[in-house]
Amino acid sequence: MVPDVGWRRRRVELSVVALALVVALALYDTQVNDGYTVGTWAASTLDWLFIASNVVLLFYGVLPLLQNRERAATLWQEFRETPEAVAGAAWLVLVYLLGTFGLFFVPAPKLDFLNGNQPPVWATIPEEELPHDCAGRVVDGLCHGTWQYLLGTDVNGYAMEILLLQGLHVTLYVAVISLAMIVPLALVVGTVAGYRGGMVDTAAMRAVEVQDAVPPLVVYLLVIWITGESLLVVLLLFGFLGWGGAARVVRSEARRLRQSEFVQAAKVLGGDDRHVLTKHVLPAVSVVAVPTATQQIPVLLLTEAGLAFLGLEAFDLQSLGNVIARGIAGEVAMTTKWWVSVFPGAALAATVVSFKLVGDALVEALDPRAD
Image (cartoon, rainbow, N blue to C red):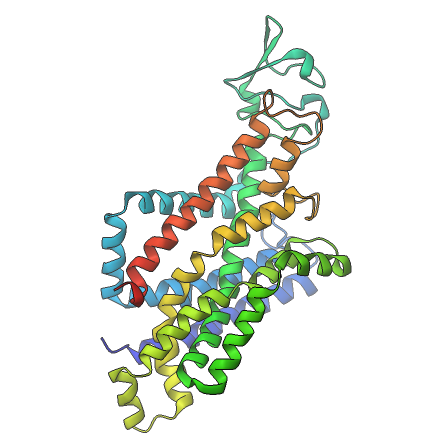
């Protein structure tokens, strides 16, 4: 199937316009506007980066798939035959909705040490293990949960449902922004290396090997020593150090397309290498970059959670890793106050597994090497 070059050209142009609009709005909001962005929402730099990342993934991930009906049908058939991938996709959709919009519908968490370690509504805890009074009823020395704290509270008195929403918010940002950085870098490097070959290919692959050999944790420790701990630093490192694997897959596909009929026809009609690369090869290989990059997201999510768990992330960032760490630190025992760590741990595990299942299904359906 020969790609619709006219549509692809329009898609690239629209993506540039959309990104330029986002950048202009972000600059105005952060440099000129001194109030709320919309209503009571004050967008941060990460929020604008998240919006821009969605634009990138829409134009270079979703739309290329929808434009190719054959690939879309293959993907649908793969998901129909893989119930676990459907379940994973449903969970990721829920994570996206909750992580994007959930915090708009709940109050900001407030420190409330007097109501720390309250159990979920269906659970109990010995009254003497509470820092203060039980918010629910006390029967035979056991504090019963109350609907005021549906999923209980942590040691600081934060409601667990709000902490989960904040944790999913951070998890979503890690996944989407990392994907949006990895995909373009992998596309550019892999396409140019695979199509041109020779010294360009060798140099690009050596760069990928060097990248793979650099321990991200060591780099992160060096960077935060200079800049301080922040989620933005984590995301930038994930993006700039995580595209190597996807670039290899794109390179392999570009090498295959170099000999394809529609590329050879474009050359016969007078197209130079730059024209063939930008108008034919690059759009055609874009469909394999997202599935491959998606498979890397579980590792990135676990790495981010590990950094938070080790205390290498900003202490006030309510990521799932930070919440889990607080849940098993100090006097908070897993056996009696299990909900503090179990709920965020389960949410993180479900998200990691879902990305793995969906990534495998995407590769199986869209990666030409799986044919």
